[in-house]
Amino acid sequence: MRRAVAAMARAIYPARCMVCDTYTDAPGGLCPNCWHDTHFISGSTCTTCSAPLVGEVSGAQCDTCLSFPPPWQRGIAVLEYEGSGRRMVLALKRNDRLDLAPALAAWLHRATAPLLHGTDLVAPVPLHPSRFIRRKFNQSAELARPLAEKAGINYIPDLLSRTRKTESQQGKDRIERQENLKAAIAPTPRHRAGIEGKRVLLVDDVLTTGATLSACAEACFAAGARNVNVCVLARVEPRREIPIFASTN
Ligand SMILES: [Zn+2]
Ligand SMILES: [Zn+2]
Image (cartoon, rainbow, N blue to C red; front, top):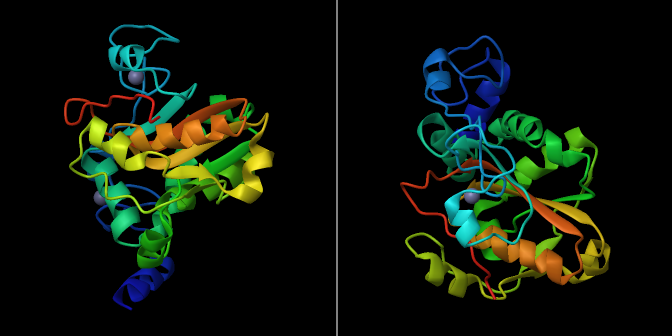
């Protein structure tokens, strides 16, 4: 109820900063302090995980992705998962701040522009039904839907589904995460045939080790996808958690 009232107040009263709620010039914006604390990813980045690369290189992968290539082709992240970026991801996921989703999806849309013309289907990383019931929404779908609408691309919210309940990935290392996800994600049966030959863009809120997105990409390839790209709102900075991708099989 309190959240509903807060959401209504945000809709009626003048624009506020998406992070700290101080007044700003325009809706869906950030105050100067929070803007300063938002780390957009730019410059030379790894083509598969968006990690910053040293020097002016293009079309290159970071050492981690070279050693453990993720199953997808291109991966784009908008923000570093720190400062305001982290606060926005957590607000969306934990505090029902769905009002942030359109502005965040607009950032995703801009960052993924190079991938969109070659995309047939947009789909979110699925949440397990029990978690969905508890949370009442899938934050990745809240980003994927407006992204697909803006791009005019077919959006299939249940392209993939969780086939069994998995434990939280938090606190698990790479091997444990892969074990946890083994065969836990599959194409939803009625969409399986529709994946064949298609170019899929998967959307998630955060890229950590990439285990979940790897499982999703492999499920798409197993159903005959022509290619799979991924985009995320924020990526965990490698020094904080080393992203190591590997097959989940
Ligand atoms: Zn602010
Ligand atoms: Zn990389």
